[in-house]
Image (cartoon, rainbow, N blue to C red):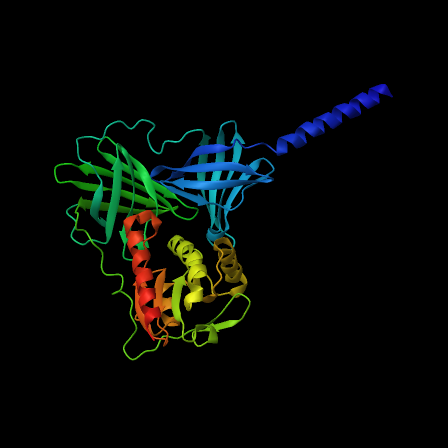
Length: 414
């Protein structure tokens, strides 16, 4: 009897040990995370902190701390989701290291995966001690940039690089006519520039050689799972993009109108009483779009502070599918995540040609996001293509200033 009891106790202790193993603790703190891309290691930071039965996780890119969805331990793996972008990091802890994959939904039943690793307590980006950059040239400033061009001088500017170099560390982004490349961070190592960013959907890796003789950059840009473009840039303090107010406009003789459903099925139209005699901001967006996310981070609290002044906002979401049963929950998730109090409707699919057909009064939809400003009489007075997010520094500040100045002007009109 004693022998049987001893065996039973031993089994219980073994089971207790095994169950304890399934709730492996994750070391709290900062990790240097790496995606294994076709262009090489793409580093970014992760800050992981326990929060009860879940973990609070931030992706770190330069000055950005992007909050991911609550992470959970399932079995022996940590799952860090970003539901808006239908992606997640999944990794098993092994001492100071997390090893696993980044997986992102491609179709209803297909996922793309990429190897992922994160090392606890490591905080550098590309090089632990990158040393002094070659020569004395700083990359701080504006760079006229062309993607898709491997050699030769830059003839047509389709982006503007804006960099800030402190020692060998570099932060910045690329401005384009349709938006920015969000927060980029990296290093200058010798005569080479390295920049990266990961935000749950974008995985950006930039490499370039600096030619000090003519102050140019030439290299490669890897994005996502398969994307690649060569790029060249030249230092140009006067580099500029086309006027964002000139790309999308109302066709002559057309009146802008729409009628699309919210996820609950309620139709929303610009003729609804809530918009009558109000200044209205119309946000053309997608839940899959990080630049739209940046605009929403600004617009949602702005609306809460200003709606009592006679301002309304409505979002027209163009999603990967026009099926409400699939896209409706994504819209609701976005509204919940950013505390959106204004209506967001499903307007169609995110193909720009299809979006243009859905809004025939516009000459075309060039970018997500695009923002329309409608006066109290229901007339579109201004259209801004793209969005310069907070990763662009002073360009974001300028946008906010111009946004408020335009709203004040429209509100002052009788």
